[in-house]
Image 1: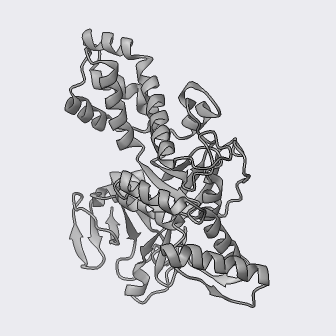
Image 2: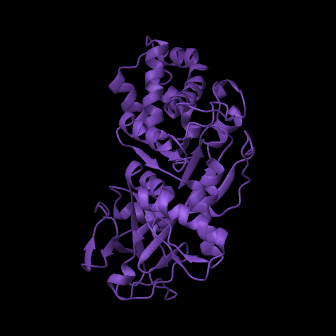
Image 3: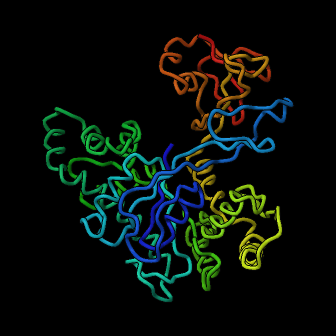
Length: 389
């Protein structure tokens, strides 16, 4: 799974990526620090069955801390987006193509209003405008891909060499869009060869919402004006906004890595492990008082989990080969934690593990109930499953 980290220049995208992954992406308070996309591994939290069964698990990917499993997802931080990026301004063309295979986007917004649309220092900028322009830039980009071939699509449809939805899907297939979903939206919106440009754009907007849902991270929440703007953003976007202080999360994770504090990402507190230097104590106290105590967390982990769990509706399933010991064939306990879309079946899990296992699937076992289940059995979050081949 890949999540794109997007936003205008200097909004804090690279800091968000570094805070979530400790990947070391370059950061600087000026536009276009990021030129090439930066990749890193972040994690979402899930309850690990190891505690339930009093076992010591051995994850092959991610880690487990006190019964909390950290399941990996990929983050990609791309060049900052500026107005008219779909026309090639700024790093627009590269930005948009870098996002083609992202499952969802996290839009890091400078909630303090201290950078303008180009990412230059200012005061009093309205971050709600940043949300609106970024969505439109992505939609105009997708619209341009289809509109460029719209005449050809209409001719082929009228000649009955292809169906209208097939022609639209073909142009957008590089974005990992579902053909069935394109067909459904074309039918629901009544799109025909006589549809106007406005009606076609409305279709593209709905496809974007389905294919590239956007979570909002109200970043720099510790700065002046940010709290008020955060509240306005929550009202405007129906509460679908996460408060965020990427710099605080990065500081906490680095201090943890250095053995200075004990901190679990997403938690509301940390514990000092050694005597702090005055400057360290001052910085950590600022984070505690102005971020953790005030908002409950830095918001970085919360935003990633909101994107994966709520927007993409993913569940975590634990496949094993020995239903009694909960191990793989090498004896590793609960070695894998896989992300699957809500509603996935036992057969979907088999194919997720390996195509060959999916093709040889004859059944599965629910390791809690020890009952045999069929290919159409819908899995639940936290299920432990053995596939039979």
